[in-house]
Amino acid sequence: MCGIIAYYGDELAAPILLEGLKRLEYRGYDSAGIVTIDSKSEFQIKKDIGKVLEIHERLNLMDLEGTTGIAHTRWATHGGVTRENAHPQISNNNKIAVIHNGIIENYKELKAKLISEGFQFSSETDTEVVPNLIEYWMRIRGLDFVHAVFNSFQSLEGNFALVVLDRDSKTIVGSKNGSPLVLGIGQNNDFFLASDIPAFLDKTKDVVYLYDGDTVIITGSSGAKRSYEILDFRTGNPVDRLIQSVSWDIEHAAKGEFDHFMLKEISEQVETIQSAASQDREKIQDIIQRIKKARGVFLIGCGSSFHACLSASYLFSKLASFHVNAVLASEFSAYEDFLKEDTLVIAVTQSGETIDVLDAIKTAKQKGCQIVSIVNVMGSSATQFADESLFLNVGPEVSVLSTKTYTAQLAVLTLLAFSLAGKYEEGLRRLKYLWNIVYNLTAESMRIRIKQLADELSSHDHIFVLGRGSLYATALEAALKIKEVSYIHAEAFAGGELKHGPISLIGKGTPCIVFVSKDTESKILSNAMEVKSRGGYLIGVGSHKIDTFDEFVKVPESEELNPISQIIPIQILSYQLAVILGHDPDRPRNLAKSVTVR
Ligand code: F6R
Image (tube, rainbow, N blue to C red; front, side):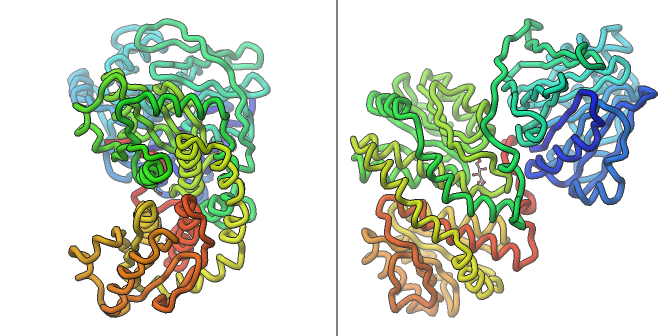
């Protein structure tokens, strides 16, 4: 996954693009680059490996001239992390610049064809074929820029969001096909294209959500003459899209007083759980009817979103005596034969762009299934495929790790489970009341307490996590949080499974976090005793201290809502571990915010 930002207007482009890159860095941070068109109609390009600010310190990205430009932050897929592989990629005749998010699957054939036409390549990327294909259609086949772009895009296979800058006609074309791209309309008839709205949120809140095939053409260099049109690159036909206003503020996309977005987003949960629970009641009832009518309901997601699905599957069963299948989206194709027209698939995805989720949705759609999406990012691909969508309403999540969106997903799913049991009011009331508990869990005093625990745990190579029932899903999520940001190996087990093998891993001092709730207490505590009697070091998370625990984190009992509250101290622990171990909590190695590759 990579981040794209483009600007076309009267202001200096470089500062706008640099700011946009900083806000998009969660999408990729191994290299970055900017290209603008200067007053002599020449390209000015700067790109390098490293994080955006490191590159800026080395190269000064602000001093590029011109009011039109495109910029990119990369998460390497094809080709290593080198300056040559960083974007923008430029055509052989130095007239076409391209930035790209996604994968062009047939790039090898296209590259071979271009090489046979005399083109040379300087990078290992799939992207470099695009500017050269456009040059081919213009220089060798005599097409104008826009037709050359359309012809080129029609020959691409795979997922992409592409933005192309033509030096001579000073035109920007941006196209979406399976990867996100949104158009921003500025106050001064200036335009933005970006992978995500926060990239230009300080400039405008007016956006056009683009759909697959949509291709935006921005021309007319100055003031009133500037305009855009949207065509479908597959057919060449014009497309009409609404301009919509987003409710997010720029503060949502800034760190404020916090050192890292991760801590900011953990702290925001006092409010975000409330906003996630504030859903349109009619929409909830509509989804409940779909669930009741369906013969077979799947909850699908990846990573943390899958953990939210798994947690909810326990709740649906316990609260509403309703069976749902929680399935990893990447494994969903194995269930294809069970899909019928009356199957309902509920896709849970923060970004709405995870390719494994989109593949699963497409499979289900082909079988005629109904799709409901639970999504944070409005206008994202998942919402475009879904028959109905519920939004998390928690603002952008910038840190790569899911924190506030995970608890928001749980809040929405919990509300659905209560509603399915005919207890919508009770569910809403309980979720709103959780505010009190979350307030204390995210307070400074809790951070200080957890910091002590993190100091103790930071020297360990392994941490185990135990839970039962819906808290087994919490254990999986806790282990994921710890390992992805601290790089300490963390592994979760259902309490009852310990004795079936994993207990052989427990030795003297092995840390083991145990989630305890009223309904699982007696069984999980006997599992904890099994750990203790083999020398393990127990960290209990629950409503009251038990003598067996070496460490204890108090989280008041919230019954069905325990999965929402109990994960919060472990989110903080993961954050503290990363800071103590000198890792960047917002940008863990090898990870990207939304995974658009298979
Ligand atoms: C973990 C994390 C990932 C995502 C997963 C799915 O902190 O963020 O595991 O949960 O990549 O992403 P979405 O929800 O965007 O589909």
